[in-house]
Length: 370
Image 1 (cartoon, helix red, strand yellow):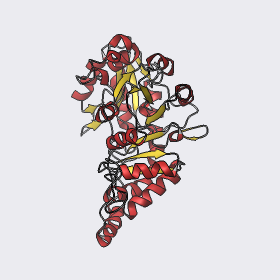
Image 2 (image 1 turned 90 degrees about the vertical axis):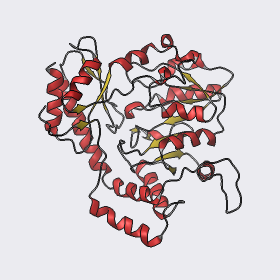
Image 3 (image 1 turned 90 degrees about the horizontal axis):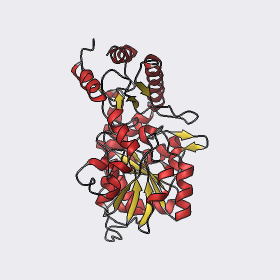
């Protein structure tokens, strides 16, 4: 490779530093650093406007938001979820004393397969927690139909799905709650951060109480909440980042298209389908390294790393393979053949707004030459 410095799977979108100074000055002048200050409130409203949703509650990170979402809906018992995700998805269940029940994924989208959900439902099942993997929307209609039939709640882990839409608007409007991550690696970031999207003001009040220790006043606590509030610094960064999100998404779309064109025809390399008629955010660029490729996925992964390119095996291992989960009956590999195969083939290539097209050419050429 001709790159002079390592190329990682993603790099955070950083606006010009000089544009952030006025925000810092306001924080210093007001001396309000946290506890849902002015920038916090502004960012909540700005995100509602941009995403086209009714209510958002900001959090210090997406994991605490997931934990709180489950508490908001008073979820107990068992929750059906995917083994093909980042561990925070299922960790949030254990933190709440909930038993995860793993269901296999769809071979085309790698999202939770609705056809496998009903067989996993038991009298203890109270909710479904799907993931919009790589920002590609789940089959929300099929999942909601099942939830309605069995009186189950639906909480979407939408960590990858900022700005993603379907034909009728934001994908975040589906389910009872949707949870976003604003980690530095995400399409929209606040360095660290997250949010819960909810459909009504009453639910937002409960979420806001739970993320602030359960306080409803100076001396009154009504629930065993947590400290999940986003700071003014992170909220200010989010307000600035939001000004550049259109530019970032446009850049990602071009890079995605360039990868697809350059990798087309490379035997054994299969790009996952794009979102089709749905509006994507191009959060990741996953490819499957199939049996027709000259070397296995792990060998390609290592050769890329040795040459300064650092892809990621998102998601490998499966969550169900980790020690705290692999003893569950639903974690057995024979129950999860599609997810198991995908975890051994997937490779997410670098993609970020400032990525030069020459780097895309280098990476694609290197993959084609093996």
